[in-house]
Length: 262
Image (cartoon, rainbow, N blue to C red; front, top):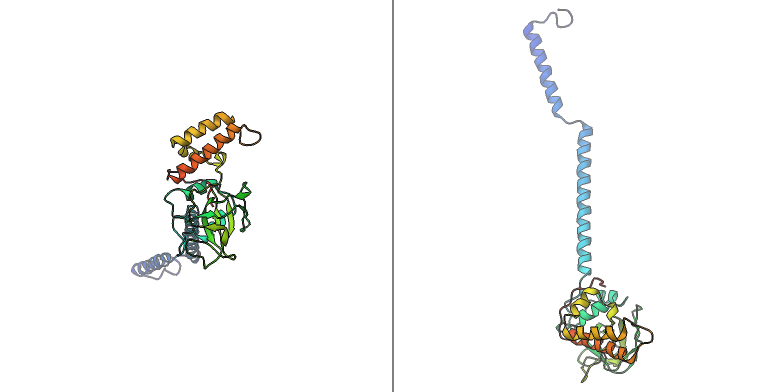
């Protein structure tokens, strides 16, 4: 044998080779720096994705909370009002289907009644009703107190007042002397327009015999018309349908949750 190992004994050469094999095996057990970096980067990506998923879940939960009808009074006092944040969204538009839920028998919200005929206006700057005037003794749902010192059964004080919800789903603003929580002998109501009610709510209302009868009578008399020149009998049939809806809602009829919510 020639070369550097020629003068070594067989046993010496064998020992040297075994040492190399052991060193090679030990060196292979340590990861290459670039492999460790890749593993660390993968872990960071996984953590980021987990945070994104958690954030998405939180947003979904927040949306789910927003998309609900209120059920509890906000704060304490003599009147039961919804959460002001929810009220702000409500009064930015008209929600006829939501109104039926808030007016239902058994709902906790405090009712108010107009003490005089007043112009319908929305101080919050949102949409207003097609009905220009609020009738004397018209029933509304009190939404937001514009005077922190309001209390008792009579709302008074020129600087006070309420934002309130009408039966047609629009908001209206009263000054302090224009609304009371004392019920009149016979409360009036705003208009409920059948064509603006969602189909599932229409179907639920028609499970009431009086509503279904009035609906059929109106359809026959008005021939599907909702505006323009109509007969006196059509006007009477329309009023009868509205009255039957009011009675059913005041009686606590079960209604599905609206799809359009504040």
